[in-house]
Image (cartoon, rainbow, N blue to C red; front, side, top):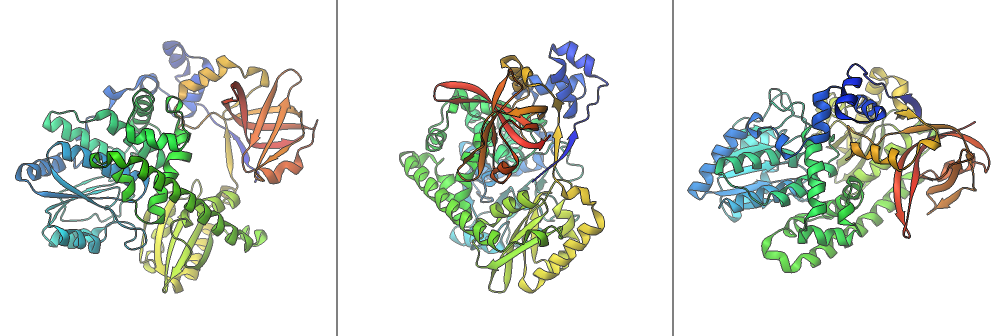
Length: 565
């Protein structure tokens, strides 16, 4: 798939002040400004932000009320239940809050919905079951609950107090009958400019609890888990999220945690060189696999003190489930791709692909892959007993929750983020949803939005790429949403080798300007190999990585796009 090439604009108003005061190269100052770090104060916090720069947690609306109620519960010996989600963000949220509450002397359990038996979000039936096993008086939701207005009312009517911690998009009408709602996305939250993950919201509550009780509880361990949950949930790495991840990665590299060490070893990760990409592509999929295929509680039990002798057993189980997930995903993707007509697809702006009893645990991953291939919102729906259970993945510039708001009359349930949503609807309403969303996208969004865009930061010569240049780029780490890895354009380079196809998916070749030669890797670009000829001239768009392989270190250009000259 080819991209629209656009150069990132730079607000140069304060560039000279930033560069001179911080003593950084001008191009690094420009990269900062391109990412909205365009004042000296912002730049100082960006580079030097540490744990000391965390905001007062009490600035987040609802935190003080929550702390007061938890204090009461602990002092009275009340039973507390944490109700979470089954993805990495939800699991790390449960572990962090459970760890702190237990150390504070609370009687605490957790409830984790099963994707297939309970579905996503707060379910009254699940709460009733947990209550039936042993009554409790305080429910704390993590990474869910803000849209569960009706469910929260029923739970309150059971005589249970509720604290909601969440980071999902709220409805206009919030749940009533709650002790507190802690969610940065709520208007007037005091944290509207901090796009925290669910575990980030829990982190603010935990900070406030530690202040209130005047204790420090396993802060290194907590920060490590908050980092993993934050990176896995793909929230922008700006503001407090950047500090969380920057400090968290440092803590992971410097100190051992036996549970995490077992997971790192199973992923063949060098802890001392851990990067965000390792969390996104190695750690998160393994933890997520448990929730995708059934019981995510194993991921929580890994971190329970009473299970220290069984850590390897739990990690091995996690790896087996991840392998099973990969097989299911490949099977479903192959099945769907076989029936796709590319010409018909390109006439639509919203794709819905449906089938009977497709595995709900992998439809979201497959939707992401189809979305990347055809660059338009994609919904994949499993039809079971007359109901459709689906995952939708959107593209940049289209808030899928806002789109679904226009179809709420035909949806039984929906929720999520700007770019990803889960839906439940009657199977007869699937064609209606398809038609309505397609119509809405044609009427409200320009055609160019459905052509993927690559934002190019700089045009450079290959001679610019050296150790000093790369180390300066690394000043901007950690990279992620909101702070992407810098993208470069180099024109008129020579393809110095034949193009190798790797694993039937990727391509590898060398480029040169006559004096400087670099290896290029194009992930998932095997189909484009036919457009590359040895000794041909191309313009190339790429990011730069330093690779360690076979006791060698070298720079690798990660291909984003190219044009034959």
